Image 1 (cartoon, one colour):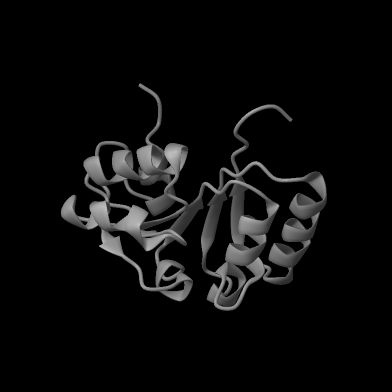
Image 2: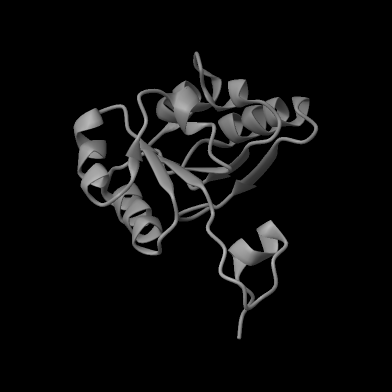
Length: 141
């Protein structure tokens, strides 16, 4: 049996069920499926999308719809699935963005972005010594 990622994060035993408080930003074609799977698995999920209409259907499934990025960043782990550099820059560096959340945030990025932005984002995250990030590339490198 492969190890359960959420139990490793929480420090629980392998047989213990653990809920993971997750936020999801970017509810396009790929992101909406990823967020739906987290909700279906029973995790407390908070969602945000720049077009709020894409987030509203998740409320009926049991997710919270965040009013702004600051509310999303309060989750234990924030996963982003964004379309391009401009969207990532707004969410990470923009007013009330993920960097404003402070060092305790785990940011899991599944975005397709330029190498330049990746380097800049990594440098900004290093400013917070405890800011945790995981780059989960989607597509070719």
